[in-house]
Length: 510
Image (cartoon, rainbow, N blue to C red):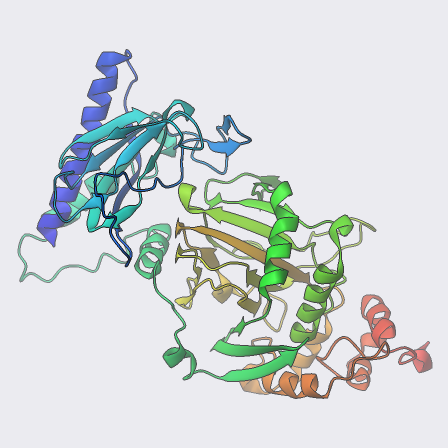
C-alpha cells in the first residue's frame, strides 16, 4: 500500500511540474502553480452489450469546464459555485487505447456545450493532456462501454491562498517516511489530520454505499405511518440526539414539481458569516428560495405533511429552499451547524413581512428530491452517522437541546456529489410558536431531559385517528388542554398560535 501511495505522489508531482514547464515555455511566464485538487478516477463499464463495431466511437458524456459554469448556450461564468481560481488542469492516462479489455473512456475537447465538434485525445499510459482551465477548453470523457479506464487529474491554481491541496503531497510523503519499519508501532495520525480532511475521507469511503440497508434499518426503532394515502416508514437512527429518517415522504410528481419551481431561480449559495451573507469556499452549490408567489396545491400539501409529522408550527419557518449540487464541480457543503456557530446560537432571524423576531432554528426538515448515483450523503460528523440520499427520503432533527442551547452533536455536512446531480428541499423551523417543546422536555424523565424528542409511536396512532375537517388541530404534539396547562396562554407568540389551532382555549385567562 505504501508503494502505491508513493507512486501516486510521484505521478501527481511530475504532472504539475510538466504542466508548469510546458506553459512557461509556450505562453510565457505563468509563475508558480499549486495543487488545488488531485483526483484519481476510474470508470467501469456497466453491464450491457458491447457494440458490434468497436471502431464506432462510444457516446460522449457531459461537457465541462474546470473553472466556470454554463449559462445559456454560450456563456461560461467564472464564479462560485465553480472553482473559478483554477488556472490549469492536467489529466494523466493510466491505461492505453490499445488495451484489448478497454473500450471508451477517451478524453476529448469540445468547441461547444453540446459536444457536436470534438477533438479526441487517444489514451496512452503515461500520456498527459494539459490545458488552460478556462472556457476555451470545454472537455469531457466518453462513456465506458467495456472494461475499466483510470485517469489522474491535477487541478492547479496560481493563487497560493486558494490551493486546497498545496501541502497534501508533502505531508503524505513525510508520513510515509515514518512507515519504513512495518513492525514499528505507528503513531495514530487521526488526531493530526484536519477535521475537514477527515470529513472528505469518510465521505469518499461511503460515496457508493447505501448507509441504511434493510438489514441495518430493521435493527433500529421503526414506525409505519400513513398520511395523504402515502405509507411512510420512520427509522430512528439516533435517539440522543434524535435523528429520524422518513422514507416515501414525497411522490415522484411532488418531487419533480418542487425541482421545477426552484430551477429557474438557482444561484450561488451563501452562508451567514460575521453578520452578513457571503459566498464561502466550503459550500459549493446553488440554491433557490420558494416565494409566496409560488405557493400552490402541491407546496401546501408538502408543508401540511411536514407540520403533521413534526408537530411544529411553520408560521415562523423560513421559506422552503431548493438546493442543487452537481458532480461536475464536486458539489458539497462542509460540516456546519444549522443553529449558528460553536460560539453562539443565532437568533437574529426576522420575518420578511412583519420584521418580528423568529428565534433560532429549532429543527431542520430535509428531503432528497432525486436519487444520487454517487456521493451526496448527509454526514453527521459528531455521531459518525451517514444518511444516503434517496428520492423521497426525509431527514428530521432538532438543532437545539431541551434548554434551547445549540446541540453540537447535530454538526453535519453534505458530502461531495461524485456522480449525477443532487436536489434537496429544506425547511428550517424556528423557535417562535414552538416554545412548548422546551416546557414538555423539562417535564420529562431524567433520561430524556437533555434532548427534544418526537414520540413516533404516538404520532402513528394519532395519524390513524386523525379526522379530516376544518376544525381539526393541525399540530399533534400536545392536546389543546396540555398546551394551555403548560403556560402557552400567557406567552403572546404561543397564545396567538394556540388560539388559531384551538379556538377559545385561552378565554378564561383573558
